[in-house]
Each structure stands twice: as structure tokens, then as C-alpha cells.
Image 1 (cartoon, one colour):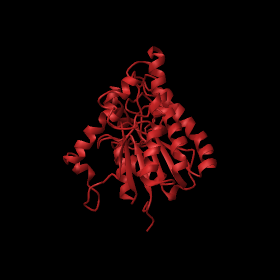
Image 2 (cartoon, helix red, strand yellow):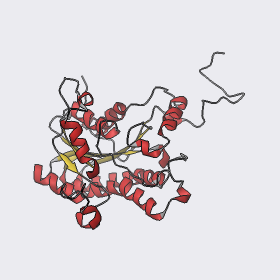
Image 3 (spheres, rainbow, N blue to C red):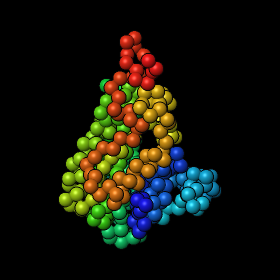
Image 4 (cartoon, rainbow, N blue to C red):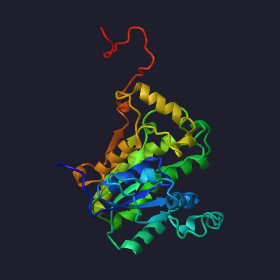
Length: 308
């Protein structure tokens, strides 16, 4: 029986803070395939996430197919806005939600992983990170600071993670990030430079696939996922509208689930996908293939589903 087998492999999923989003679903799928999983969490959400785990608040979501609970090998603090701790302003480092967590930078994450597990200790790195402080603003009204913040956390951090964690990743390993259709097409309401960040992320995926492939022998791909009404996505403000629109206009009208994205990521990060790199994989029920909306019928429109 052909199956995804990640036994003996270690994964890091950056951007997990609850049980609702794609990051958690990817972590669970990787664990179901046999990988040990570490996660990295934004410092302001770190204690909340640990409390959810310790108090059993998300045990139902953590339940694996064999009845056991999903376990995280390590939970690291990570603010992907900072490549090194020195680059974080004093007001951030001294903030009560940051000051006691240790080095929360991308470099600090790499140092901690190497200290905990040694060199060449990773096989899979998942970038499930995005932040646009002005996402509710139209692009034309986005400030320079808001635009650069969106680009820095949502796109450049992937470059920084490949740079820092690539040397810790075994030959044949895989990096994967999460993109969205707004990087290719206009999605009104998805603003603040986030559409630009997703476009950059997809372009960088292709370049990183070449560079990291030659330097470290690893693959780099991204998943363009359909919208999911998670807690994090609620910051966009239009996520419910997007999910309804996708369901009405996609070839497959079933609601997209986080598990479907998790399973796709597990495949992309597994040896079964050893020939795939530099690719944007669409997991959106086929919405990306559509060129016209079908939830509003124009007179004379051909509808192959309708009865003659």
C-alpha cells in the first residue's frame, strides 16, 4: 500500500498558536505520517497556546487516528519580524510578553534547534506565517511602514528561515510555505500590501528552490490555499465573504477544510514528492481554474450542469 511515511523525520511548523488554522492542521498531518513535530509560536500568543494544551482545551483537535493526542516535541518562541534579537527594538524586548521567552528571533530559533537536537536535525520546515498590520486598508492607502511590515513577516521571513535553517536540514529535506490567490489576482479587501507579499512569496519560492537546492539539497514549495475562516484569518475582515464566494464558484463546491491543506503539505514535504520543487500547489477546490463567476447567471451563459 502506497502511503506517506515520515517516520524518523523531524518537522518544524512555524506559526502555530491554536488549533484552527492551517499550521495546526499541517502539524497534525505530519505527525499522522510519523514525523516528530516542533512548533514556533508568536510570543504574545505563547502562554495562551501552552495553556490551551496544558488544560486540555484543544484535546479534541489533538486526537490522532490511533486515539493518542498530538504531541509537540518542542514549542519555540518566534517573532519572524526579526532576523536577530539585536534587531528587535528595546520596547519589544522589554515587553512583558517577550522579555522572559528568550531569543525569539529567527536566528534564535535556529540556535535553539541546534542546541536541542544538534546539526542536521531537521527534515521539514513549514512557514505558516503572515501579518499585515494594515490589511483592511486598500493598497493605495497603505502606508510605507504597513507595506514593509507585511512584506517582512509574510515574505522575507521565508528567505530568512531558509538561510538560517537550511544548513540544519538534512539532504532531501523540504521547506513549504502558505500563499493565497491574491498574489496573482485582485481580491478587494485583502489589502495592506498582503497581496504584494504573497506575490513575492511565490516568486521567492522559485528562486529559493534553485538556490537552496544547490546549497543544501532541499526542496522549496508553496501552497496557494483557499480561504479558511480561522481565528487568524478573521483579522482580514472579509473572510466569511471569501469562503462563501469560493464555495459558490469553485468546481468543487464543498467547503475547504484545514485538513485538506494539511494533507497536501504532508505530501509535498514527503519523499513521495521528491521530484517537486519551486512549485505553487493550489489547494482551493479548483477555484484558481475559473475565469468567470458562476453564482450569477447571465442570459445566454452556457451551463454544462443544467439540464437541457
